Amino acid sequence: MNTDRKALWAVRQCALPTVIRSCPDCPGMRHRASGNIRVNASGKLLDVWLLLSCASCDRTSKVPVHERVHVSALDPARLVAYEINSQASVRELVTSASLAAKNRYRLDWTGTWELETRMPLYALDDPNPLSVQVRFELPAPVRVERLLQLGLGLSRAEVRRLVADGRIRLPLAPDAKAHQDFELTIHGPGSVDAAKHAKSPGAPVAERTDLARIGLPPAPGRELPRRATAR
Ligand SMILES: [Zn+2]
Image (cartoon, rainbow, N blue to C red):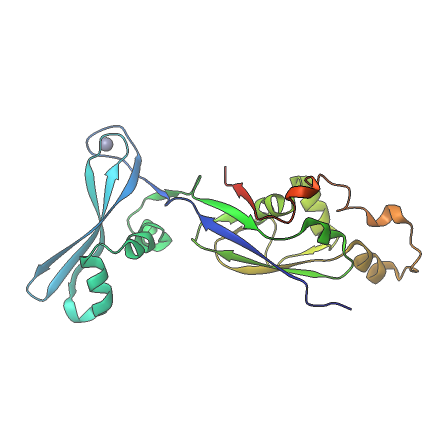
């Protein structure tokens, strides 16, 4: 029996999240990272800010990252990254839930990610379990059942039924939001029935068609990487 069936789903970054907070100059609420970080030194004390631009009026505003912190308290490599406006640092700061909470703004993750799968869909009907690694390229909070809908091409009701039937096993609730890597398993139509009812191998075909009959895309595209955008 093949127990090594694995697939990888990647939540890929398409854009950085939008910072939602009021602008002092206009009624606009949406801000994007300007791409810059400002570091101010006063003796041995440093202030570090992430710079944002208002999407409506372009006004620059500052989000404090470190305030009056002693230079020795910051990792030198990190300080250099801040000073050269490293895009990795900008990305890390603007996607940080803790920085958002500390500065009392909300992040809008709409349109920031897409799901890439390289799973041959015909594999879903295989009786052997398939383990799916879900990897997050950015910490976008994504509802688990939404990922399953996109990854499997199913409706929410179909996903919920498969979870309720034990065909899809998850480390967190289907309506929970995941933002970091996790693993799920998909069990073939026969395996759950067999475990539940100890059925004979001659079980009726109608009982093992759940995933086979539901909206699979036409054959030519199904082994190509598929992309589904977050909306
Ligand atoms: Zn503005």
